Image 1: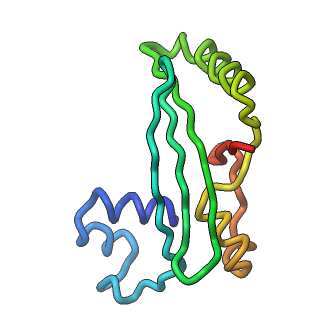
Image 2: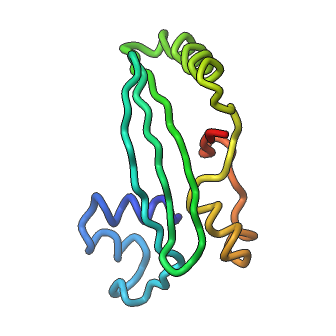
Image 3: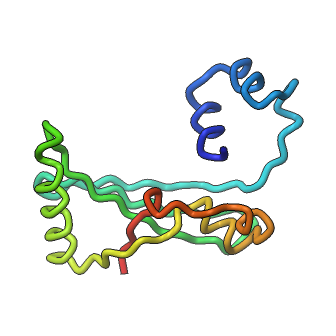
Length: 130
């Protein structure tokens, strides 16, 4: 629901969001966190690399995430692209590890009450640099 709400708030009109959540106005929502993401973008050969530094004002929350992408033209190229990304990671000593996304990690550290109510889906996890 959190991911869907953030997407809706960014890309939809306010009336639709309020209807979907059965709310009269946004004042009925409770702020759970404030996260600031600073993104750096790099290109190496055909690879697109995003490095995110995530912080939260008033806390010592400091989290890094990296995404490595290799664009393909057809779905038949997907497996080959995955192997090339893994090879790139090995060649650059990037640890291949599943980690929590930024919001889940923030809740794990600062809002255990909320974190316990989530079941983390490993398909939405990210990989980190060691």
